[in-house]
Image (cartoon, rainbow, N blue to C red; front, side, top):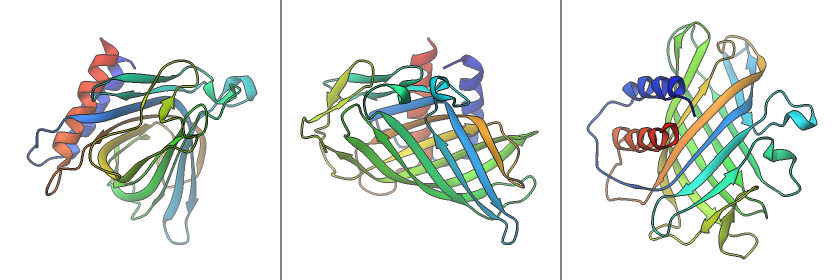
Length: 232
């Protein structure tokens, strides 16, 4: 993760607003060079955005990579190195959302879901909702919250395993459902037309549920702290 991208994310966090509630994440994740596509429906001014793992080895437009890191002790990182989607395992990342209320310059609402799949088929899944904003030119950003996040031990091994190296226990306090914050940055055409093969970045933090509303200010801070660690 480069410092230019970190600066862009810090700018996006200005959209969060509100008072911050101190809350540490249990898991953070980030994926870069995802393949972002958007299908626009001009009849009702809506569309569908997707960001999926891509590999140059199989003719994709980008060489995606990323990691999923357990912050809560005992810590661990599941690493998904460059072109991981082409490795001989089940590692994958998929994000999709519907978008509406599209204008030329203002933010609009997006609703959707994400799935992270580890090397042997275990998944982290959740829903997301929030707002896109046009920050200048064709640069778009999405800042939102995640909900109904679950750690699904499909394989029965109890760990979330990277495609390349590293793993961590999927047993967490609280739950089984968790909340979080997510930022998506993409640099394709703005959403008044369809586009494909757009380099897309994702950063997110998952938190233990707390009483009452968890505000985006605290969640966004957790994302910035994660990204600073990666840049350092």
